[in-house]
Image (cartoon, rainbow, N blue to C red; front, side, top):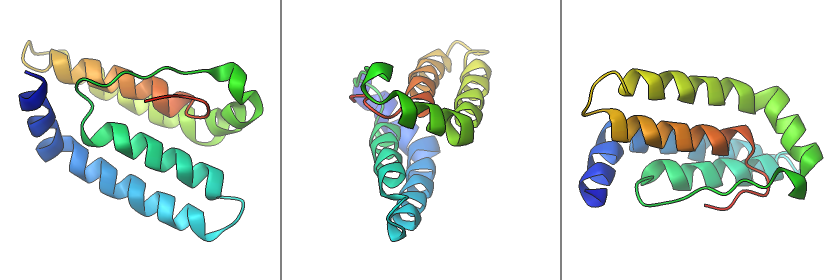
Length: 117
């Protein structure tokens, strides 16, 4: 099930979101200030490509200031989007596994600094 879920996710969602995150991360790497933010975009993209079978462990205490800045400017919008998409997936029985992956992704996009995938 994990392999089938990853293949379906990759074709429908993963490739498009990962391309967006890779481009955003590359643009952020151009500036010195954006390098830590670009690293987080690459971390999120790594989960978005094949999320089934991976776990996310967030550690807010490791980088509280960086996580607060990320949450204010980037994280809350992306987390709300992931939650809405996850709820839409959970409407159907077939979409429930994909909804769970969206909820897992919401935790990572809310607090990526110090998180382990």
